[in-house]
Length: 366
Ligand code: BGC
Image 1 (cartoon, protein in one colour):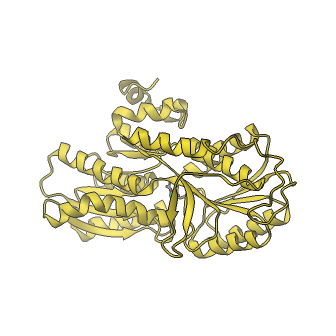
Image 2: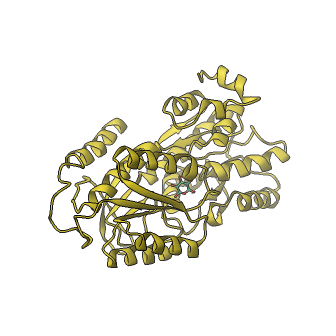
Image 3: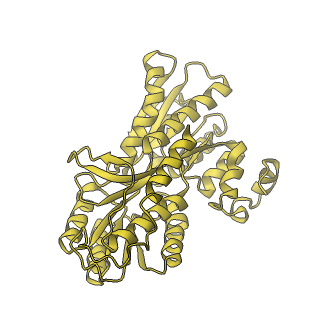
């Protein structure tokens, strides 16, 4: 069933024909730009602290996709600075980018950047995070509620395996300014809320972590443990960075491995925590597919082409149906860490260092 969805999304994108097919089409550019211009794509990544993915995966795969298409690109990172984000966007527009692709730091500043680009005839794409009330022509991401659902299901599986009766579950949610964090929470709530309501589980502390910042997550989680007198049996943490923060606090309290922790992004630390038994699961999102789909669209819109994505997402703020590509996430546990390596997402040499070498061998990672 899941496979069907993926195929559908991929076909949706491909059904529009090859991206070079109408390269010389002189029809007017959707964003009002000059269709004769050579594509030049500007990408603004959000930061490098909230997740390793942006610098280790997204940048690499996007660059490879643009290079393979022979298209000039400029990929920059705003390092969680909203002013820098706007400055980078202005510079990119001045330098003549034909498409601007952004991962917003919040919807307000993201919208300002998208609107300005649009007013200058620059095509726009929301990459990974939807800018609420924004004007991007396309949105490329994963099915983010499905991500949260996998996290909720993963935590239930780990708690069941540990045989914990009436477990107290704490939430470490993502940034309150990231629409994805809302979607992830909707997903895990759909699994866990019924269990809280039926009193099978007990709802523990529930907090959002500003900017997805792992350092703040550690402080928050430390307070959660103190406040509950150590009575936390499972942690739904929204990504690997937050999960690792929880694991580090649990380690200090000699509770690591006893309290299951979830994650997302399949980063090296998250996977090592899984191999060590300190993290229960992560969610792998094949960023290469996301980057490839976004690059294909970015090049097409730069040429003034219209692409059928076969899917839309309703912007809850404006009610606009945004043409979207939503890819399918996958849950990863100890037995499937090897799949992430086999997919070329994480390097075996980086994962299987020191004490992890033996764990890699034991778990079939070659
Ligand atoms: C992304 C996650 C990432 C988080 C923090 C979210 O919008 O979808 O993959 O872990 O931001 O950067």
